[in-house]
Length: 403
Picture 1 (spheres, helix red, strand yellow):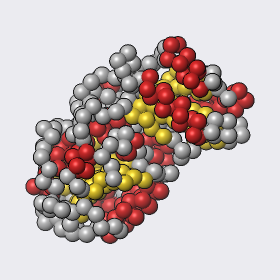
Picture 2 (cartoon, helix red, strand yellow):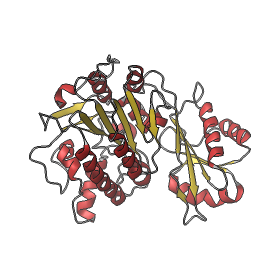
Picture 3 (cartoon, rainbow, N blue to C red):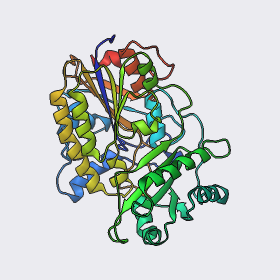
């Protein structure tokens, strides 16, 4: 296969790890948000120790913040190239960030329902499923099963709720609504919000288990049903050109599976890193597009700064193992799709800049400042450039800076 510099590109999206509020944060009620910066401050003030992320620091993560990160020593010479990217898509959800990374920024408005979904929509779901709907309002995912889970367990009704994002979420106990049935209902709900009357980013199946409000727990059987991409992506272009295209985690769902030659479903961040380890032992040529969602769903939305930071530390340890196993013709890219500041108000995503870290064992010019990239499509443009695939007209390659 033809490539300029790297045979394998591993892109890891550490979901929601923003690095400071974006220029348009006011429009998203996110002024002052800073997911990574505030977690670092929390560890110094509340845990009496700095956040321990030595591998990310070695790649240049502290350089994403003027003055660095609280309590963390700056490296004299970062091993990687570092910078930040601005999300220009109109939405502030995972779909928007991931689509933009693969050169398909979402330049259209989607619908939100802060007062609940219209009765006409819910009536169709009830008729299809044979089950009544309860809740129908914005809610935290953990609080909604605490408040409505016991009723759902007793009646078999569907808990439908939303958030500050363009999502329709359906929660049900796995013993009451079997997984396959919940998936079928979500697939049908997806057809109802594909436009033109209602256009939404995602339907999310949210199964849970437990016996009562005190022990209800969401399971790893979550599934995302995204809006169909409105055009080709970097993944499609690579696949058409004969390159390997591998999805680890919800990247597959967010792109509706388009263009991927292989995929892995993650049970957790660590399960996702197990899949990355497996993928990186193989001989392939192309891109592995990985998402680790626990930062967002398990800690960010629950406003758990300690858990979020500890999850970052666990990821950092696993990242070191990946870096140790990388070959000279491998390129690692680490970024995020939006923010979810656990110290911020509410429980929704925060509009933030996202980190951009790039490293290869063969990198001859470490410590390069990639600056503030004007769009996340720069990541996808770099991948296309490396594999000698024509530009899609979105983004600007930084390949020459990571040699």
